[in-house]
Image 1 (tube, rainbow, N blue to C red):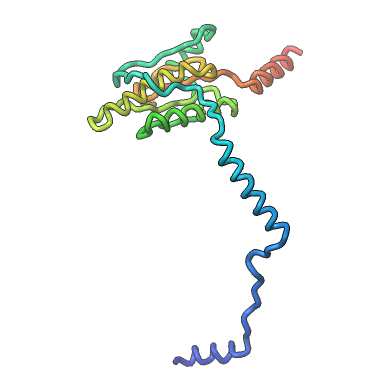
Image 2: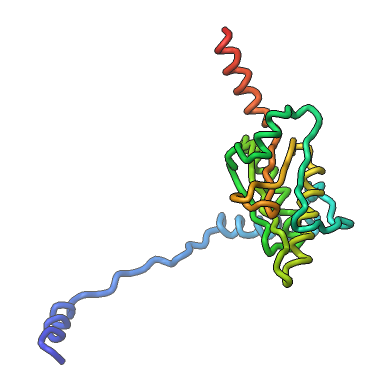
Length: 197
């Protein structure tokens, strides 16, 4: 043993370990809380899963050609607004990449993404679905492209969409224009009223 070790042990000879409290103090209240969580879990197991709000269809969607240009515009959308969307002049405020997802997962992700973007007041988003150009992914990605085209048309929140410019993914991605949220409409009315008032 070295001199340093001897000195250390001499200095520590009268030290006693600190007393520890139990990590979890069990009281009647904590036991009751534990029982109530067990009751909630049992109730949830009996009542079944929550209702799925997702309105997107799952079956019967045809895959699309990798070079097919997606385009859609609801009635009432101004031509100038659609032209700017088509040209990629609206900055994508959010993006979702569906690469390597199954149809079921992509369906849930796309629905939640569009819903979240609308709740946050975002107007322009980018959806990347892929082209399916590699032989191993050809079927899966072209199916996702067909699904994206079909699903975006089903959502009333989606006002228009168009395949992206080459620098943003080309025909493997799509620009999506969302309807204004009620909060954004109110903000615009207030700003307009303050300008004329």
